[in-house]
Every structure is written in structure tokens, then in C-alpha cells.
Length: 193
DNA sequence: CCTCAGATGGACT
DNA sequence: GTCCATCTGAGGC
Image (tube, rainbow, N blue to C red; front, side, top):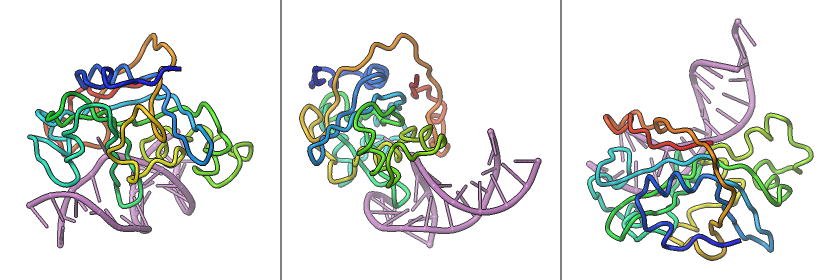
């Protein structure tokens, strides 16, 4: 199936966040093609968004990645032990990204299960199955995504996104865990199935 | 089902 | 020194 190219990402961040729902993340590692379907996203738009690391075009060593043109990864460490995977959007100089907040495992569950829980997929509890990659830190663990993959192009291995399933209906709401962001905390920039 | 404390380290001031 | 775009296990109901 077709990999998404730069035309997809070089658009308005809210549009990209919506349209990423249902797409497949593919992580190639050790001869495996770990695949998961995106079920939840959030948009971050530096120009107007106090929740964005690059709010008001604040450029630091970390946020420099967000200023790239759409189509590369922005991956950072959160709370000292988890990674968050974002897709950079919009044109060069506009610090914008879409956080991948949740996904559904699709292919190579066995390999992902070892990465995520350190035990075979068949041994997972109902609770573990339900929480396999329904969070930004969880999906990064299941797909072996960490900061070493920061600022890499997303149209080629080892990490890319390709066409997925058609989405008929989705939900929107406020973004999660950004209470500090004042008025931006109420922006309905979360999209989920 | 729920809430809550603790883990843990880098980015930034 | 403070703040996180989080997750887990323990304990309560």
C-alpha cells in the first residue's frame, strides 16, 4: 500500500490530524514490519498554541525539529521515561505537529507484545490487550519508537506511515494533559475514533 | 470500575 | 530548581 508523501503533510495541521486517523504506522525493525492503525491524534500549532513546545516560534535545540517542513518525525522524552511520537506538518518555518496519541495493533503482534510487555501476545491479559497502544507512551514502546528516530523522514524505512482504512466517523474534543496552556487548553484539537 | 503516588531524566530558566 | 503532550501497580469500592 502507498506510503504517504510530503504532499500529505505539507497542509494545515488540523486537516492532517483528522486524516491521519485510520492510517497505518509501519516500524521496520530486525526484519519485522510492525504495523498499527492510528486511532487518536492531537494537533499542535506553534503560532497560536500555548501547549506547543514551539509556542510563539520559540526555537531551541529540542524544538528546532518542529520548524522543518512537514513529513518528518518529532520524538521527545516525556516524564523521564516515555517517548511521544509526532508528525511534523505544514511548511518550513511553521512549527506544527500532530501527536499520535493512540493506535490499534495490526501486524506482528508477537514482536510488539515482547516489546510492550516482555511476554507473548497469547499470554496477555484482557486488560493488557485493551491497553496495548492506546496512549502515546504505550504505542512508542510497542513499536520501538524512541528519540533515536527523531527528525527522520516518514516516507521510508525504518518508520513510515501508509494508506489505511476509510474513516466514516470520528470524534473531536479538548487535548489531554495540557491544563497549563490557558485558553489553548480548550481548543478542540483532539481527534479520535 | 475508580483514584493516586511514584518513577525518572532531560529541557529550560 | 521546576516542569512536564505518561504509565503502572496498589488499594478502595
